[in-house]
Amino acid sequence: MAFFALFLLTCLAVDVTYAARAKPSNDIASPQVTNWGTWSTPSFCPSKEFVVGMQLRTEPDQGSGDDSALNAIRFLCARVPYNGGPETSTATPHDGFWGTWGKKFYCKNDEYAVGFQLRSEKDQGKGDDSAANNLRLLCGNIKNPKNIYTMLDQVEGDGMQWGDWTAVQTCPEMHVMCGLKVQVEEQQGSGDDSALNNLVASCCSLL
View 1 (cartoon, rainbow, N blue to C red):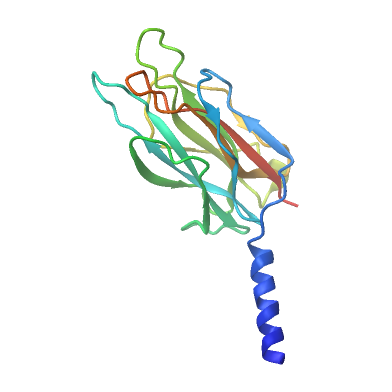
View 2 (cartoon, helix red, strand yellow; view 1 turned 180 degrees about the vertical axis):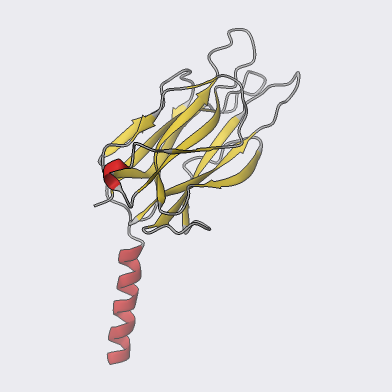
């Protein structure tokens, strides 16, 4: 009986550890340079984990073909304190359609993602639209929370370079990124594909 009780408590502890995260208190959104497609269901890091890196799925330059550039974003998550190295979980709201997953990019030790910049190409009219192209994470050191936003490290992904960087978006004080949802245009068949258009990142309290 004692063994069974211990086993039950252990299972309950695991359930609590990996329970679904409570609704985040704030969202930060990329400025809408283009606005094609529908929004995915949000995907979050597990409870007590936060974003420490990213991985991008990108279609390379298609020459005279149809470019879709950035197709998907995967956030890499870890617990506090983060000591570098591999993530413990991921958040991927949409897998995209074209291209391959690139390199994993991480914040430094003791840093978590507190903001981002999305690189986007404006509507090309009768030309080839690629919409979102690349992503930067802005990482802050949580060991000094009062100054977490004064000296941010930029971690830039390996997406494409068309378009321009949009304005920096940052979480409120004492919040870090913990999830995301994306706006993705469905496959257009013989039409012009743009794939990923916009990003909304969720911010969760460190407290």
